[in-house]
Amino acid sequence: MTISKFLVAAAAISLSATAFAAGTHGGGHGHGAASGEPGKASAVSRTITVEMYDNYYEPESITVSPGETVRFMVENKGNLVHEFNIGTPEMHEGHQEEMMMMVEHGVIQGGRLNHDMMEMDMGNGQSMKHDDPNSVLLEPGQSQEVIWKFSDNSNIEFACNVPGHYQAGMYGDVKVQ
Ligand SMILES: [Cu+2]
Image 1 (cartoon, rainbow, N blue to C red):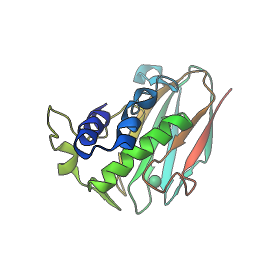
Image 2: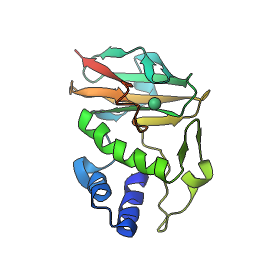
Image 3: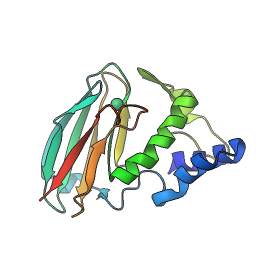
């Protein structure tokens, strides 16, 4: 929830009502209660490799069973910073406003992340770290795993919420069956 805490602090400074709303709606950033929960490595039934390009995923959709725990090996093969985030369309929409703030504050700079900025204390120990268990944010060439236990909610997408990417089609369906 570090980004949401940052948002609240930033909204207080900028008096930005929209940004504040983004941080409070739908339980805030990324917890993913509606889309499942962080999975345990011991419960993983399958590993799926997900490649990220500018601006799409390979594969474009996946099928899981209700309650299944999947290890995603996420690789950024594009030239831009990309995110792999598991959530409902509503969660992604809220997260896109937060990501917009990360761009505006120089945390995301096209093909790189400003790690110093992400670590920076925004006051009260809050930072713009992107460390929620349902997502990874990667620079070109980076890879990282996400272990996620899906619920029976079939209204789930994996998506990149870097500004403009979702709109360019950088999302995929999770079919739960
Ligand atoms: Cu992207």
